[in-house]
Structure formats: C-alpha cells, structure tokens
Amino acid sequence: MRVRIWLGAAATLLTAGCAGDPAPVAVPPVEPVTVEVAAASSGGACTLLDFGVIEEHTGVRFDVAAASDRKDTRTCVVRAEGATLPELTLTVTDTSIDVATFTADVQPEGAAKVSKLGRAAYRRTVAKTAKQGPAAEVGWLVEGRLATLRWTCERGAAKADAEELTGKLVDLARKIDTRTG
Image (tube, rainbow, N blue to C red; front, side):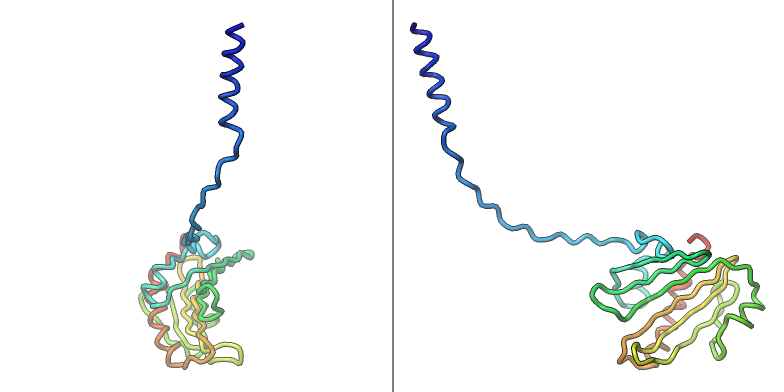
C-alpha cells in the first residue's frame, strides 16, 4: 500500500510542474541578409561577365543580370537593381566570317578600328533616342565568335559621355574571354 501512495504522490508532483504553459520569450527582429549573386549564375553570355570587373573598368556597380540563348547567340544584360539605365549588354554569336567580311559587313560605317582586341574590332557611339540616352559600342571578332559589348546611357547623358565609355568598354572587352562562353 505504501508503494501505491508513493507512486501516486510522485506522479502528482511530476505532472504538477507541467500544467502551466511557459511564458513566451521575445526574439528581436532579424535584419534581412543580402546575398550577392554573381552575374555568371544567370547563364548564357553572363558566364563571361563579373560585376566586380565591370565596376573596375566602368566605375558603375551592377547587381542584376539576365541571360538569353537563341540558336547560335548568347546574350547577357546587366543593370543596377531598380534602374532601367544604364545597362550593359554582351552578345556573343558563333560565326564563320573572316576579318574581311567583318570589316565590310559587320563594322558600322564611321566606327573607329580598335587594335589588340581579337582578330578585328571597332568602337563607336550611337545617338540618343526618345527613350534612351546615347550608347557606346565595341564589337570584335575572335576565332569562331563575334562579340558586341554595348552600354546604353541614361536619357539625359551627353554623347561625349558615351564616347568616353567606348575606351572603358574596349578595356573591359579585352578582359572577356569570348572563346569560352
């Protein structure tokens, strides 16, 4: 009988401590964590670009990239989050053209030739339109690939700004290995 009383008392004591709900503990709010994603994670021609290298050559930090693949052409567009312009577009197309064909058919009239960039290259500026500012463009031919790097400026930018950017784009283009993308 004593054993039953002790067991009953022990059970009562053990369950008595569990009867009440614990008081909630306040947890401080957590700040959102921003994780930078590499441009290359978008695929396509974006695998050839790096946000840090772009910033190093142009002075502008981009953080959003989008890619497209269509037949023999891979494209990447990079922008700063929340901004439509400026934007940088890289297009790489598989081709079998030679230097003479590039110079005659691809290089725009009035474009300046660029040395030490692929087999043949040019740079030029494009006038602004009603929807966007002027653009700086560099095009080059490497073995089996035609590449174009185009920077579209904000609407209020001057053509001289785009002209200055062509030199920066040439330097950036020299860092892009279009043979691998």
